[in-house]
Image (cartoon, rainbow, N blue to C red; front, side, top):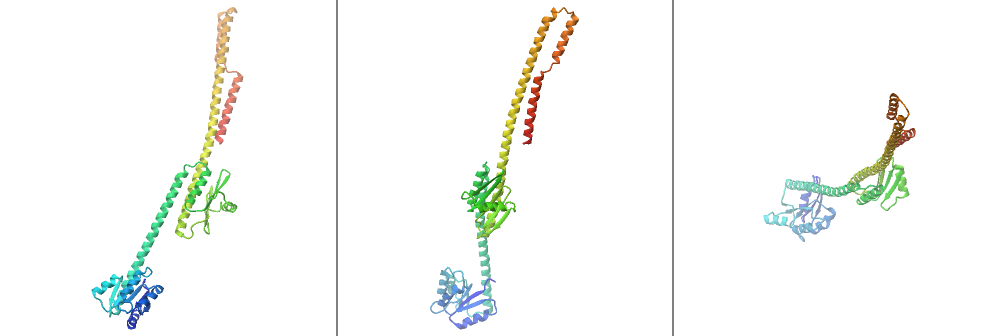
Length: 375
């Protein structure tokens, strides 16, 4: 039940006794005042939820007391129900005009007062429920706006690091991103047998570096006090000032931080992979150029060998054509010699020296290709 505290104000003690009698079997805390000034002097300390306020009182009447209550920001929320011997329309309108929420006319019965208080209790319950809904909605709206702004920063970060091609620039971008969340951070990169550290003010303290070394293989997430350490294979991040005063924000920022480190890890992997591919491409280009050069040399060698053979055999043919007719051979002998020369020319092979050079060139090509396959 929302209604627990009531203040009754009446200059007639008998009327207060009646109210006390009616409410004695209900689970209400009741206090009384015998005048308007006494009511105003005690109301902020007692802070009732409902005031049963007599209209006709000396010094200050009920309307004046109600007007004073509703003009005070500290008491304006208190429900006022006028208790009066007169209940004309004009008097009720006067009561409502100064801010009263209900009106009961003397004499009233037990059930009538209880019924009105039950109604006021329902008003309080609904009011508290509405206030809670408004509070929750406001909190949700603020969280949504904060999360939207934070996600916007994260999206920008993810888009921008896609254009980064070196670990040093990536580490600085990560620190800058976390600084946009007002986070004081230290970062360790581990890649290609290199360890690099990044911090908001340029360098990490020795104790932070030791902490990275001790905890880098101890699990993904460590939280202690207002600090958080996130570990990935290539990256460790230490945040020094997590917002512990705001549990919702703390949880949200923790999730953001883990995601940011995750995408940064992937980008660092991409940078290292690209470096490996570039290095392999450079070696491949070198080998390809070498193979190309050796093939051209080989082709040139074969061409020279072919031309040399042609020149040698051509000279042999010319010499035979000159000498054979003067040797006194019969026709069959001449045919036999020419036939043997032709067969020799057709079955000729390159000089042994040229053959060895060709074999050496092919051996070098095979070695180059073998090194390329192993890289």
